[in-house]
Image (cartoon, rainbow, N blue to C red):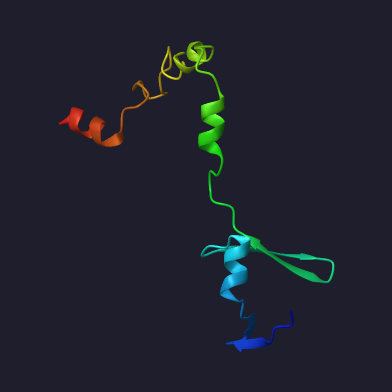
Length: 98
């Protein structure tokens, strides 16, 4: 099908028939790329598409519980040079001085 290229400000555009957009599964956004001398327009993938199926396929056998519950060790034995513990903010140090 031939389509006209129209001016849109300093850019150009193409009017796409609604039936073709629906047939290809387009929503409100699209991916546009160049392949050789061709412009390729494809439906935009939804962020996190397929995550639900991937989580459902992963068995919850508890094999990851050990590392999920492990201590990160960030505060263990650590002291800042001024003697304060990590995690204390400047405002809490000001309050402590008063």
